[in-house]
View 1: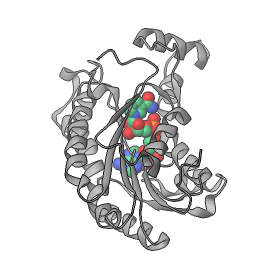
View 2 (view 1 turned 60 degrees about the horizontal axis):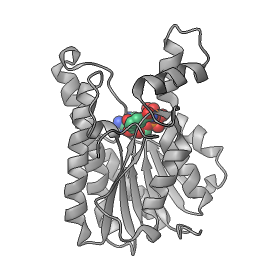
View 3 (view 1 turned 45 degrees about the horizontal axis):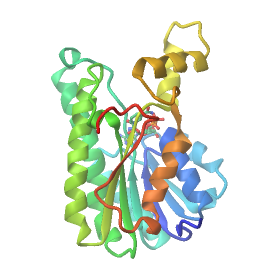
Length: 260
Ligand code: NDP
């Protein structure tokens, strides 16, 4: 099926690894142009230049928390490709700490990242998106937003705030023809889980270690997801073929979500 993304332009934040980088690869495969950002511009450029279709990517070193830098990045994207059709707000991380181990600064930093990591790019992109005939925003979120984990207390609370903000944005931006949806992740095998495996003192292989992790977290499919399994729903929601979907939340968690 043709997703009708060829020739369109998408902004992807946090694009140098994991879900962001795989989303860039899939958009390129579909013939789209991509403007990609991450804080470490060298790592980003190195990662992206190996992708087929990399001549249709522009990279920019930018922290999504720096509003001025995000404005510059988005303006650069719009000018380079003559418009913007969508934004994937993917940049982020999680904080492994229970509520009583989390400092005030960490609570604030988590909320800051989850809210302004989306508000800054959306504010900058709305004037461009308003000119598209099929504009879409996808916020990469986590199942934690609705199913908090005590070991990720601040991240869970901040994810819930982002899910709530996404609902507001979908309602506010609909009149301007901009759809806003969320993709909520369970446990996805990216750099962050590889780093946790490497810093553990286990004698297990990554496969054994991640199978135990999946069992411990009650993932029905018995394994972590991979980045492509997340990138596909993200790209589908950007597609003009998803033109009647807004305010929706798609869980990509292999059955880890227990809510109805
Ligand atoms: P990775 O750690 O593999 O990649 C994160 C990317 O975001 C990197 O490109 C990083 O580059 C960039 N980034 C981080 N902070 C910023 C910032 N302030 N400004 C700009 N770029 C930034 O993450 P994943 O692919 O695993 O995760 C993608 C998203 O999904 C994240 O928001 C994550 O929290 C969320 N998620 C992931 C889960 C998982 O199991 N993998 C589970 C639930 C949610 P650089 O450091 O150079 O800036």
